[in-house]
Amino acid sequence: MGDQFQGRVPVNKIIPFSAVDGPGNRTAVFVQGCNFNCRYCHNPETRSLCRSCGECVEKCPKQALYIENGKVLFHPELCCGCDTCIKTCRFDASPRIRYMNAQEVYQEICRQVPFIRGITVSGGECTLYPEFLQELFTLCKRDGLGTLADSNGTLDFSKYPKLLAQMDGVMLDIKAWSEKDHLAVTDQPNDLVIRNMKYLAEQGKLYEVRTVVVPGLFDCEETVCQVAALAARYLEKGDIRYKIIKYRPMGVRSEYAHYQVPDRELMEHLAKRARECGMKTVLVV
Ligand code: SF4
Ligand code: SF4
Image 1 (tube, helix red, strand yellow):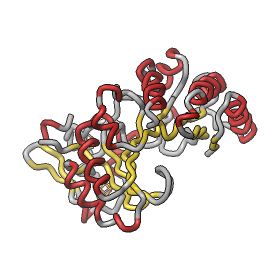
Image 2 (cartoon, rainbow, N blue to C red):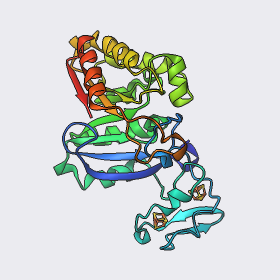
Image 3 (cartoon, helix red, strand yellow):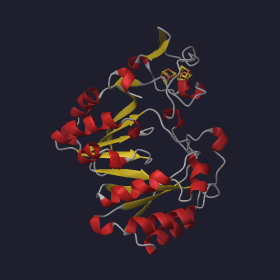
Image 4 (cartoon, rainbow, N blue to C red):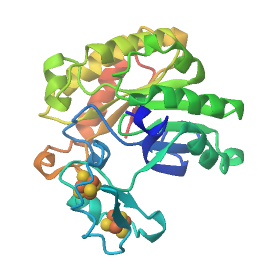
């Protein structure tokens, strides 16, 4: 997707300091665009690229959006962050995108270098842009920064050894175990996701696996047990965390916001099952 912009990829936002996107204090980079359609996505405005339909431009209360040569563009300095544009958009897109190459993103990260332990690239789905990731991680590694990717596991990592060499690890979402359930959650199959889980674990590059628990949407207990049992087979290569995440309806598209929020008892039960299946580090959030 980035080639038409000479190595530039759509960046949704860069958070200079984040304590929730991996270990320690990190800069988190969020790219735009995703190949899944997760029913519980809490930032659906990162899924698609803006089609420049112009519908959000006149709704902007700060005149931060404008049209030039048929493209909707953005004045960041005028924006008040009201999110009216995102609420207006019918295409799960955002007009507040900057097309940036790895060097430009790195320049923004440089300001934080003395104060951060590393970077995490998230999305959307960051592995839609593997060349960008490889270049950005290479630049960050030179400064001694840690490099993590938050991914849905749909890039065949075995075909990108140079990227893997520059990446400390992946925070891998396993949305559901059975293909039927995975299709119900994301509209996409998961054979490559599971293959990636094994490959990354074998390479010592699986930092964390994660599952969002949504009772009724898929078989949560089967997923947690199967993921835990598979990950546990690789623990001698290094610890792998299993983060079990409670579904929350904030930001979820209205047509999908009816799912049941799991109670504490269910979350604790699933954490117990993950430990029984061999996981050592299980987090419930
Ligand atoms: S963000 Fe959405 S509403 Fe705004 S111009 Fe792009 S596609 Fe249209
Ligand atoms: S968030 Fe969107 S609508 Fe609100 S000021 Fe910024 S660009 Fe305009």
